[in-house]
Image (tube, rainbow, N blue to C red; front, side, top):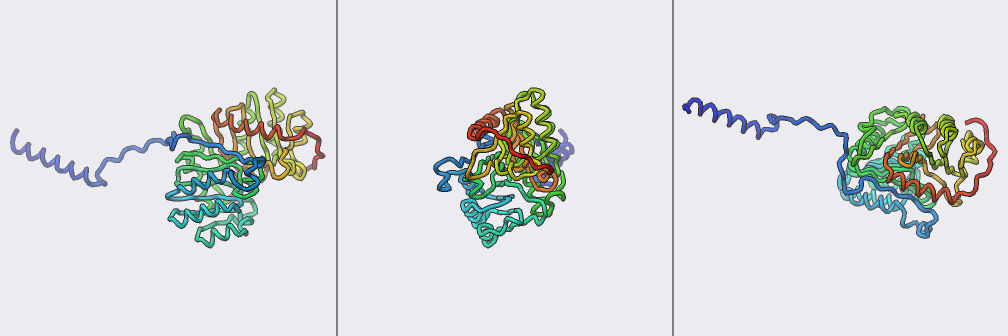
Length: 368
């Protein structure tokens, strides 16, 4: 090898070494398509239910709030909270403690529910809270922890919501689901986009977590009613629902059509809402012979908003089956395609269904 060739080779090697050391020279790998969320800490989803009849509920202990508080207590970076209402001392204390140890804590709330002492204590501690200041409701109930897990469901972060009402709380360990919820949270907290001002910008509306299909939708922007109608219309065997408020004529009619086609439809609705709501779907269901009952929770609300379809698909979240939930409120739902998750919700449905008294006719009020 001649000296000229050797010198040239050494020069090339030196340039390559310099480029490797300089970040600007390094080749940039193509970003992978984020279609499958990574596994985080074992089970990717955990489902919890309130139990108003439990002896510990009378002392306001042992509820799902304690699990949420434990998770907040382990937060290291950030906790974002979207709360329709909040007066749980346990959650208040956990948020203040997180803030004091340097975790970034942010909140959005329904403005009409901010005038309580627990919320004022959060403000006094230095936690920023943005109210919706809109006619529609900021009706979400979710918590995002460290951009890697989401707690959501029907449970308000209140004493009654946790210890007197029937509710569900779901923990999802997924960075992508967390990104979906963080995007919506930032729209409210930083961009002041609530209700009809919201935009459809969910990063991963459909994704898989550990091989299980999940959908995330926010109302009004994502057309939740349309998606629910598609799911109901595609039901083949059964539809079981828990509904705090059910006044959607379109969704009610779809359930009646599926029942006519032989799909088994059962439901439990909140007694107080049926007796006071205008345009409730309870009467049409009852008149059509559906096995739909009024709840037996005499001390609280049957506050779930759940559909279980064909024993394998579960819809849950803050979204009541109403016109306002679709058009003016801030709401969220998550759809699980997982027989294991469905089995847990079916067991809770059966428990509430069996506690409900026999169906009886309630005079309807025309209009909606």
